[in-house]
Amino acid sequence: MTSTGDIQDIRSVLDRLYSAWADYDADAFAALYTEDATVVMPGVFNDGREEIRAYIAAAFEGPLKGSRPLDEPRRIRFPRPGTAVVVSEAGILLAGESEVPAGRQHRATWVLVRDPADATWAITSYHNAAV
Image (cartoon, rainbow, N blue to C red; front, side, top):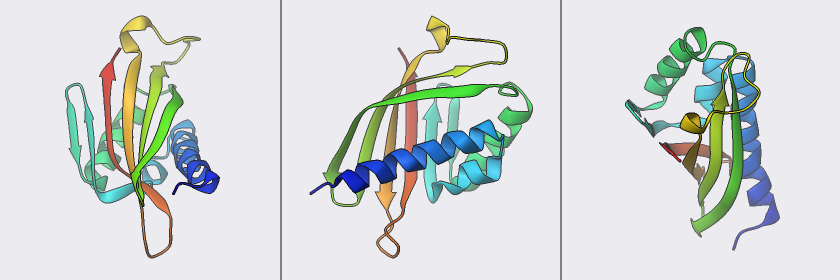
């Protein structure tokens, strides 16, 4: 059974992820992923928290410098206890942009797992595809 608290906890993880992005803090960003997490995006495959951290650190210094993400969860479901799947509408605003161009809008799928030791949620998989 899913509680309102679980949904709030999932939203909190995503909020902290985007706060880390706003601060361009790759360490805080990657800390929200499990050690064995994967990220799959067009042209990108990150296998493990350290690869995720290195990728986002380089992106914050390069193409994502001055950017901010937009992400609106549209569905949060719990296929089994301790596992959450979030589907969101997302995009990245680059420096100086006020809206995401059509070519950079995407749907994202997040899979989060709850650590049974301390009941905290972490991202174990992320994937996005263009709309």
